[in-house]
Length: 76
Image (cartoon, rainbow, N blue to C red; front, side):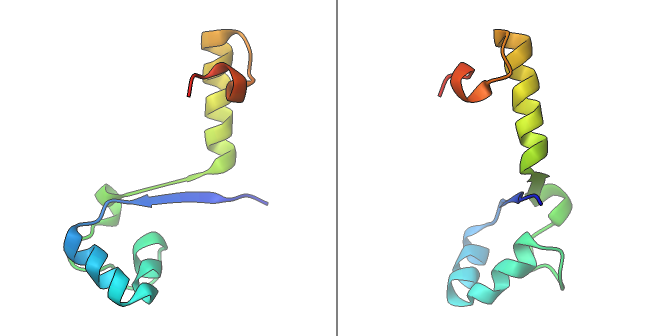
């Protein structure tokens, strides 16, 4: 089992549309249906798996701080 992180860069008009019709969030964050005007998934979207992000953080912490325990080694 895994979880995904999806981030989207949207303009004010699209934000207002999503607030008025929350069902639109699925067309922005997930690959289903036609994307709203002015939104381009290739350039306005970032998505990754939490396990991948955790592995990257562990590798950086080990290389930079000598321990893979990134939650205690990486400054907040």
